[in-house]
Amino acid sequence: MSAAYAIMAFVTLQRLSELVIARRNTARLLAAGAREVGAAHYPVMVALHTAWLAVLWFTVGGPPISLPLLALFAVLQLMRFWVLATLGPRWTTRIIVTRDAPLVRRGPFRFVRHPNYMVVTAEIAVLPLTFGLVWVALLFTLLNAAMLTVRIRAENHALYGEGVSA
Image (cartoon, rainbow, N blue to C red; front, side, top):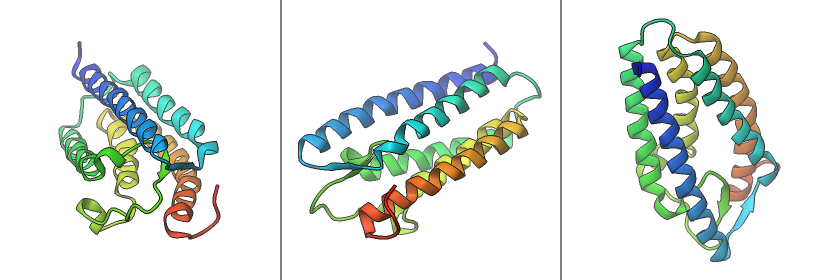
């Protein structure tokens, strides 16, 4: 197996394991009385991330892997873990609002409102660039930006009472 496919296997297994954690956390939060916001855009987000992975699987293996960009991607994985660890049982891939629970303001949330979206945005660009796939990085960065416009608006409305819910 080439290094590119080993990296893709790691990323795919990571995402699948995160979906298991997210589903468990979502079910527990909803059972405890939390509510989901922005469910209408969730399938679009899943389709976008699935397409990103699929395109990468079918297009890797060309130019040599950029080690500096791979190192940057590794740093992004540490940042991803920091976000997940900070949110703990409140982390999910959906927008789940828990009544009376204070907003998380520790970890990376001390610095920015949506650190996970920053990490994911960087990952969507950096991983394809690691493989020399500029067009994949550009296409999916633009698609992700459009999707995040809707998602962040919905999340800000749910958490902070800002903007219009989507």
